[in-house]
Amino acid sequence: MGKKNGFSPRHEDILFFTKSSTFTFNLDAIRVPQKYYRERNNMAGANPGDVWQFSHVHYCSAEREQHPTQKPEALIERMICASSNPEDLVLDPFVGSGTTCRVAKLLQRRWIGIDINPEYIQMGERRLQSTEIQLDSIDPRLDRVPRDLPKQKVSAQKTLLD
Image (cartoon, rainbow, N blue to C red; front, side, top):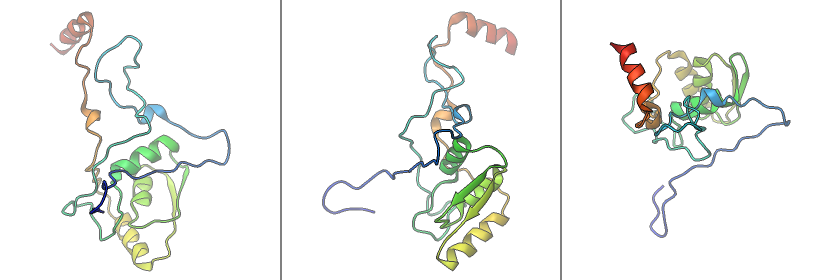
């Protein structure tokens, strides 16, 4: 929401809770490709860190529903991939537009969605029937190719591609 006095917030907090010290965290499922090659870096990608940048769901997007706080499917995908495995149970106690349940279903997770508003429940049920994947807010860093690969690896890659 725009503000007339002060800065408009450009972030939203995501809270991560667990009941025990043993929990699922699938770092390899959410790695972000490196920008530069370094021997010490994991070239499978970096941990995305605790600040993520995803665009809001644009009003003309095919993914857009009539919900005031709809989250991008790509954002929810990262959270679900990081914190669960196929067949795990994903709970969304404030289901809203149904994004979490829809993405959980696409990622082969079981899910439970709860909301007090019957209109949002119907919205979520309608979205769950769609099988189209609409991840329109994908982190642009996922398209990275390291800019400075060592010469011996670049020449080895060229011979493999020829």
